[in-house]
Length: 387
Image (cartoon, one colour):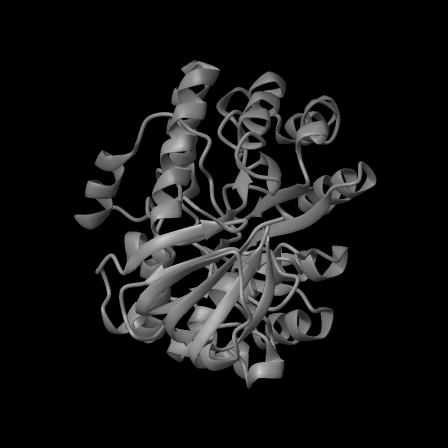
């Protein structure tokens, strides 16, 4: 197995507490990759020999971003809906049905090509792990094929048949829940790792969400929840009750919700590109962090409420709009995302971790927030190989 020594690292974010608090940052550092994993981390002057070496030119290195919430299997776009929002039309969950119609009409090859395009776009911006949801098919066949497409690109696939109630079940939401927990789950489970539900006005209530999540868990899927995006509601509490890995959005949370997240160990996934795109209030990350809640940052890349694939953009928004420090934001976009996916092999650069990393054309990670909108990622490694 060949080894590669990376030198010329001005600042190395390891997220390894043995190297210091929070980011475990090392200066004038080096890193050895052996095969697909990290074999050694430390100061450049102590680096061991390797089969090959690469000088990164005094650049910063961070763990590859872990995007724990994305909706990439879809067809069409909703640019006109975005334009309408920017001129005063408020966002609601109903726009999802527009994408559902386009996705149902698309061939598998079209869907796969769109996912490939977006994953490549993410890679160029330093994302090395991405979760991909279904949720734009909402029929047995379309949810199953959406997940089969997603599984071509990631192991982190999420069954979101409970995105909204489709038009054909508008008068029979209970019948749709039966479909989601029965035949649709049967078809989807073999392609999915996670089960998710959108708990919101215009989507699913607490009782429906519990039934859907527990049915998924009974089939071996782990739970995550779209919670408290458009207003206060039961989503966070449901996530904590069922032992979900994450409650995502958390834009409108009560003190009881914050306490529940902290005590249950449920990760709060914050998705600031959505608030940017919908002109909604941003989540109060500071409040969550100060209460001891683990926070993840993710893009929620989707064609409706927020069509951004950029984790650096989310980091900049988190610092500017959500009162996170640059270090907290970078940790949440890497180790926090890994926690949301219950992964221990990604989100950090300690010995034994998967060698997923992003090289920045900057002297430190601070520039991710300091220089918003600038394409700082010059190289991305996935499993030890540049992509």
